[in-house]
Image (cartoon, rainbow, N blue to C red):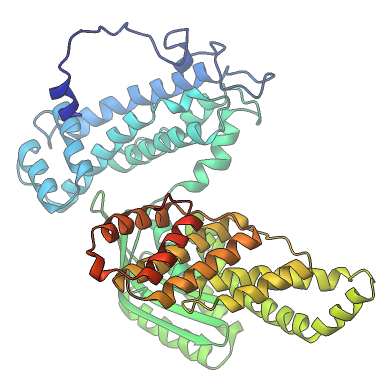
Length: 507
């Protein structure tokens, strides 16, 4: 942009017409009322929720301002200048920028708890700004992901207000959302309760999340999740078949506010999605050691009933499960659990498919309809084999030829063409990188890649080739600069043939 301005200096000055917008003929009406503008697709919907939502957020902003000014009075020279300067910390959060912020904005050296309070106040103001993000009003429905996001910001600002000043604004805010109509729910508060409150993150929930995920993480003693870091002073994980037990004492640290919370936990995995966990924020070290010893002995003695009883005895009746995990981590763990079951199923189906292959041949040759069970087995196994081929480091095109033949024979449909496209594209790119590393000499690898490209083309697979096309173009330019003595006519022929497969213009 700087170079462009140097080449084409400014010639005209434009003035902004205040209270106007590019997307709404009603000025800024779209962001404060049901002006009639929307994204379309739901002609029977209205946007009457915009005005109540704006009023609720304006109310919250006005409630947060005196809290911010009052609580920063002993901490900051100029609260609003500090709020604006906090952007430097957000852009590059590290010890240096944090130290500079404190040195220039704080009235003097701050104790650890004062720093935590200050950064909570900064975050409260940051979220109070973010909750007015434009896209929250742009679309059709208050329960859309854009409006949900700005309500998440509002929820976080409310959370910090309660932490730093013991001011509780949540119930009033929810009542104000009840005045916002929804096209899909009873009102805006209903959507808020369903989508926003369950997503709330704090140190206690982080402790639960860490305890459950420690059953599956490779190195759970020191892990980072979102803006938190969990470090274990004591941790043990035992396994007995599919069952697992994790016991630990852990400190969860917020990288944003520097707040910390210490936890003791025990969590038991019984298989599938069944997790039973308990957590405590005030367990003494001696009590923890005694608990850990007794529960470990019960687990090693295969007495799971006693394990659960001891957990309840030491922690109390309140438990958590896999459903308390954050969504992304929950998906990750459920995927890991599912993959074990799927691998077993695939192995069984593969045996079924191989054992009945000749029978399927005989049925087909006899012009008898193939039973659905055989068709389903062939679909699942051959789709898996296509994926596995492109994941395999050993490029044996004959394997793909056999798979392609069976796909055609059993009339198999590629179930996940986008995933196959991505994996095949990455595999081809990797082979091209390998050819480049060999220095325009290895004809065998190039011939193999051409065979692969031919087979892919014959199968009608749509492959994402942009990365390979870019690399090929770069290789082509380099190759053309080589002296004739370093070129091979046979290699060159194969290289240009590859260019044709990639849809590139070659000599």
